[in-house]
Image 1 (cartoon, helix red, strand yellow):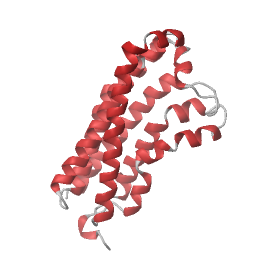
Image 2 (tube, helix red, strand yellow):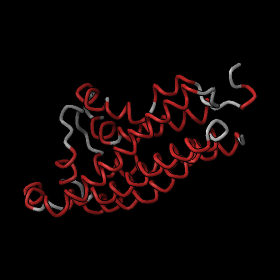
Image 3 (cartoon, one colour):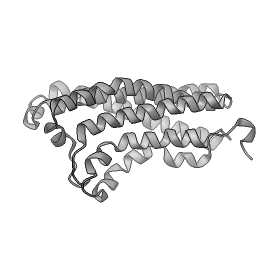
Image 4 (tube, one colour):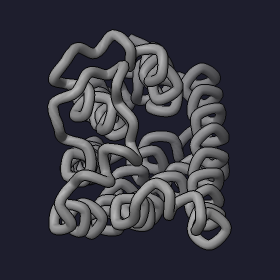
Amino acid sequence: MDIQRFKQMAMFGVMGGLLMLFGDLCFYMSPISGADFEHIAMMNVMPTNRLILGGMVGPLAGLLYGLGSMMLFIGFRRHDRRLARIVSALFVIMLVMGGAYHAVHVMYGFIGSDDVLDLAPKITGLIVAMRDVSALAGVSATLLFTYIVLRYDTVLPKWIVLFTPVLWTLLGPIIAPHVPYPFGGSIIGGWVNICFITFFLLCYFTVREPDKVGT
């Protein structure tokens, strides 16, 4: 395995996460506690230029995230090429769809909350469908990633399964009430991408040469 190529792909994932986090901050960065965080209400009061900028970065961030996901194929292919392809593809689907979701989600900030309810059949269906596809791919990818890492002696340590982004994303609502003012908008608004940045960084720094696996 080319460990430098693995790390290069992981760094693409980090860059995608940082870019998407920048988009989140455009949407939500405002002094508030985690308990008071409400994403649509916060977007409704953000300047239009911030919302546009935040939405524009979604597709590019999704592309970088997708490139980052290729590290899994590089790292796992020597064990099972078919599973390596599948887990990489699922991560790509999750993250590219997430980038598209991010770009479309900005529409909630352009209109008032009352209008959102009126337009729900027109825009919410699309947004929810994109979110659900991303979530389904993410859960499937996480389960398969966990299986591969625990089943084989891979180039990643087995404890990495405790830091899968989907797992930590699910903890967001539990953590939110404990985030103090004024960091709620930044931390809870960007929580998903903070989890992905952490995951890609851990993969970058903990990957091992194949000849050192199991030692």
